[in-house]
Image (cartoon, rainbow, N blue to C red):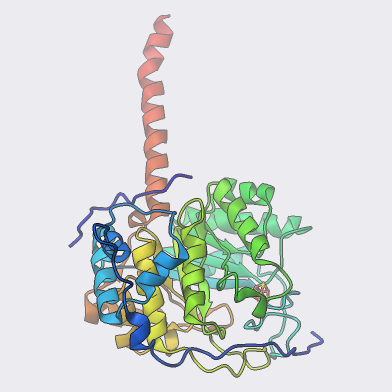
Length: 405
Ligand code: SF4
């Protein structure tokens, strides 16, 4: 799929064990001033940072060194630049409200060291069967009534192999959510090309499959599936014409260069993802990362601002961990380019900011829920509808001629 430019106006002004793994120190100190020095410029060449600030289109040719140059700018300059770029490509007042429902909790065979739903860790979470279609659609209706325009459904599966009945039910859920006029997103683990096509045909708007962190840090976090397996699923999703939602989790014991590596992975995909979720680790007791110290806020903000400059058209989604942020911190994230939140009763297994709380925050700061036609998924839908309308009117116009013949 070619890179897309948004059509919105530009310039809007079980048995468990815990293994020991070599986790590195969590970033809890600001980046040193020395690391914030911009490399000397070659006379006559323009700065990578300046180029990013002036960009009118996204590009997938980023190098890690270039992203690192952006990431290591003084935070005051980085966030200002990110805000400028955000206003060029998005309406800064519009925040997409999404609700995420766990449609199948726990019992997952993977060993993601942050996850309450892995059957390998004793987290006290009870595994459950898949929720029935009607209950999911009822939850989607409630989410819509409360202002959410996107409904995301997550299942704790490694992959979809041998899950024909489950896939059939998920497709029913997708169709039902779409019929409500909402965007539908699912996260079901790894899927193959055929499963991706089936989901596309059911009307799926987006598929979430996070790469979690940099390629280098990934083996410290997950050992049961590789980084390349994750990328293969993302590729299947992209090739099926489904919007890709892929991002990461900050605070997994990574280093600043792993934030750069994470952004570099998604920025050099064949097309930038439609959505880039930024999660801050919520430590879950019983998991290998259960006692991890929280990541410093400036590292979260720096990652969001860098992502905005590198992925100008992508929706940057403030995901898990938002409820631990004070309102002012959330606002700094919105100003630096974040433009989507998860809102509702729960986010998979962790707490979530509620709709009323978010509405009150939006009111105080002049924000508003993003309309579905303002998103890439919504614009695709409008374009498809336009094509259908045009085809219908052409058929109508052609009918008398055909009759004459
Ligand atoms: S993050 Fe997903 S794949 Fe990993 S253990 Fe949790 S549910 Fe399974």
